[in-house]
Amino acid sequence: MIKFLDIQRITASFEPQLSAEVQRVVSSGWYLLGEEVAKFEQAFAEYCDSTHCVGVANGLDALTLILMAWREMYGWDEGDEVIVPANTYIASILSISRAGLTPVLCEPDEENALMDATQFPRLMTLRTRAIMPVHLYGQVCDMDAIRTFARQHGLKVVEDCAQAHGALHRGTRVGALGDAAAFSFYPGKNLGALGDGGAVVTSDRLLARIVRKLANYGSQEKYVHLSKGINSRLDEVQAAVLSVKLARLDADNDRRRQIARRYIRQMTNPLVRTPHVSSWLGHVFHLFTVRCERRDELQKHLAEKGVQTLIHYPIPPHKQEAYAEWSHLSLPITERIHREVLSLPISPVMTNDEVQCVIDAVNSFE
Ligand SMILES: *Cc1c(COP(=O)(O)O)cnc(C)c1O
Image 1 (tube, helix red, strand yellow):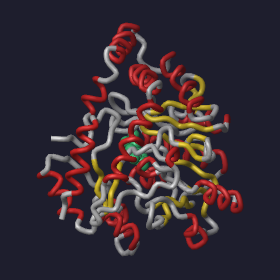
Image 2: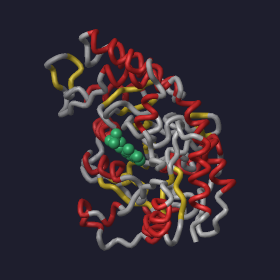
Image 3: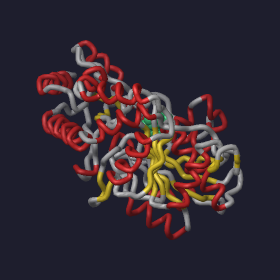
């Protein structure tokens, strides 16, 4: 059986260094707010072509903290609006709600499933404050169009980079393409910890300082609380793990691209549409997502051939009970994408034989 993602094999590929680093931090007796996090923050900010990185507990917190900080800095009111893709993982949208702001759903581009800036004029109101592009599946959004619109209307841009560590846009990394960026280090991401983790990346020094404060109970000085913050930290063990894995991220992303290239070239089944790639360096293939009108049959066929697949995502956010207030909304592009997508196995540790097996399985679907 070819697993959708063999995390055990990924972890093993970093041994023995990974366990040695974990053991070193365990022995040190220092587990939070220490040197390992500071070291990783600096390395990751540099990796992202940016200047500041704040390690936090997870990707959802990273997004939420950026929005909380902007509310504090700019006095945004409760219910002010943030434009977000309608077809993203629900965490992007939850972060907006959690910060006391209102998510405004944006239909994606039909071809690449990414944020479509031509929709913005229709969605803008007097209360729009920010845009949240999501580099979905690992592919960079059309940041030129998004930034131009944001600049013209005085909006902030927060990148959701949870699926796109290391992707490039005209030679610059994601994380440095907007005013701030959020990353997740959930184990299955391209840069994954051995548990939860996340980071805020920005070149805005004041924003970084306020995020750090809000993530530390609203405190910059022990027992002095300036705002109603939360507790959201990246821990020392995870930071040490991430430092080891960061060193191989570019090579891992190259291997993902190499597999994707083979998939795209060799999957010739007319019933299955492989992804549209506008720039190879702009895609790190966190997911290799194909489209098929008979998606459920394709998934069953692949399972019978021993290929495990997943659906990202089966239910669109506006059809979730959590957002019952949107149940009347009709978003045809988003809904069609959710009906048709299927994610195939892709990871830096897949063998060429496994890649060939997936290709043959897809091509044999009738
Ligand atoms: C994984 C993910 C998140 C959330 O990250 P967590 O660390 O799981 O909180 C946010 N946005 C997108 C697009 C994601 O894929």
